[in-house]
Image (cartoon, rainbow, N blue to C red; front, side, top):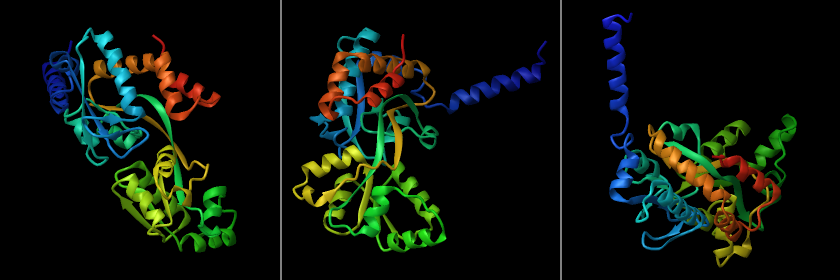
Length: 302
């Protein structure tokens, strides 16, 4: 038999934990059914994943969310479900999800444990690779470690590497996982190089073009896209090396398992569908064997 004081304490703890959840978390599906609207945030400067305006958004993640919307129409029995897009920044996107201002963010959002303190995440739908862009005429003291990815093999080699890299400056996108990665690598190598945080991928690329920094770290596909669109893109080099790999997923409000399950079911159906596979091929080319295995790993069977 449970003692009354113990029962009261357990009930109080349960009520307190419920009160700490966002007000919209427990009835997200009810809100979507009532409004028949999906509010989708996106970061405009994240091509090829997301770009454009609220009236004309574009990109792989934008179109993926469109296909997800079609799945949710069928799954939830909402044939009139509308998609409304809202431009956000990398600094505000997770706050917007946590506060219920948007239902998710249709951009390349990396799933990390630190971010899970603020939001939940769907199943992954992509694997992002951290790359770098430099000028083609960059000196060997910069190109060699970036291209080869060699690790320190002793005090003399390490000192030589550090002496070369310390002469160079680097940039990363602010409020991105690249910031923590770059700082950790600089600490590990004992570098005193300048690290600048920029508000957009376009600005980071422009700083490399204009010689304001020597290298800019961001998602490699994003860098290749900007290089192709920049009039001076031929002056730039994006090495094949990936410095880190991160699962990309849709951020969702915490504490709503039913909503996350609906999104995961929809995403899995999209990735299995001919439309989802054609969308991937249109943006990134025919998937390699490794990419096909990753897509199967990301989705879940019914």
